[in-house]
Amino acid sequence: MMPAISKILWLRDNLPSLYNQTWKFASMQDMILRQLGIPYPPMDYSDASAFGCFDIRNRVWAGELIDELG
Image (tube, rainbow, N blue to C red):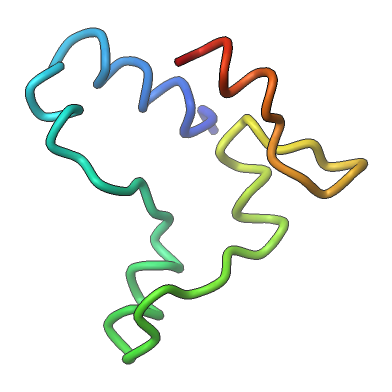
């Protein structure tokens, strides 16, 4: 499975108008929970790690990587 960050970067580089209109990137689980009435569902560690920019060992977003990728 390809990490979500590579797909997000592809959107940024190939469809910048769509990327610039995007408020949030969400997982399928987020979308389902939102449909069930949870407006901003928490993201669990397994979903976060699938994005490809989550520090699994420290359980935090990889800020330096995210900054570097823009």
